[in-house]
Length: 480
Picture 1 (cartoon, helix red, strand yellow):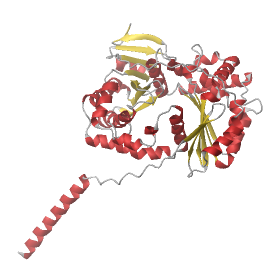
Picture 2 (picture 1 turned 90 degrees about the horizontal axis):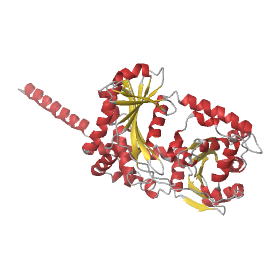
Picture 3 (picture 1 turned 60 degrees about the vertical axis):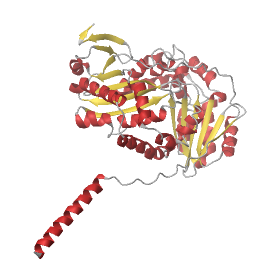
Picture 4 (picture 1 turned 135 degrees about the vertical axis):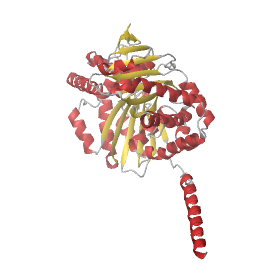
């Protein structure tokens, strides 16, 4: 009897222990309280010539990040010369009247620096990172570029060749081709469309065009300079004034651009890219501009839809259906409007079905409210990832530049945690209906010899070339 009692007692103990372990596995640990987000106070001042200087002190980095933002992007390029804003910006690093392009590169390397130029539809960014002991030398390099560009015929010809080769290389990338075609359609009849220029434009640029664009828009009262690092506003203003005080101001005309209109039509496009084995799907539509209250709920919505490999699109297309190699979503935001973009690389035979699944996910998130678990998971990721993102020097200085340049307000900075935490299922449902219920534009990129047979069930398929020119239309697989 005693032995039986021990056996029963042991079995009961094991049962209780197993049950407790099961409850432990199913119950996630209570998260630690959020650490206070310690963000530096951004200070700014406008110099006598109209240049706005802003500083975000960072004492934890051994280098400085500098962002010079010129408020002239591709939307300011002449209608007959799209791409001129990008070309002019690149020319500034091609040497000045005093130093050559090679000399500028050597000087940047000597200060332990990196330099890059980015042109968007709204503005042009010159990003410079360098060791903190070389602030004077870095400002001198920047002043040579900005105040004394040469625009020599030899460098113009050389840059045309470089950018033409670079664009042709990018046009081998299906995602680049598809995204460019999507934006061409979404930005149709809007000045932003000039951002999607083709390689033909390089033949048209002349030295006088570049000089004219520079003279018109490269003015201190049309610029913002942001410094992040171990310095204060007084030091920054003194240094910047010393090197850029002779930059002459001039009135700059900046016409107000119209808002982008959401498209709502069944539009499926195909771009032929020979010898590509997979099908690349780019799906999207117009959303809100950069400074818009829908930003935070849409950020959470985008996160749960396609922000990570655990989001709905990835789990559906790759894990469940096994159609895709990857499937994600993101948003591009500009001053007059933006776009959400879904990208998926799928096997050719599943291209048509994958379009249906992407559309289904957009319909599902705009047709039923999300669960509390999924909502909190998306919000937790954004909140936890934010400090990591802004710890990167380039990302940190870019965000500071956006805040100052576009007057975004402190909600994008000091109240980021609160803004995300306040998003609820009702607000997400509202923005999902607003932006996902209009039918998205679909762009398919791949080898037509492989793909077109798999797309024959599409009612109407428009076929474009790499320059965005409509070649012909297929009605149920038959050329119209």
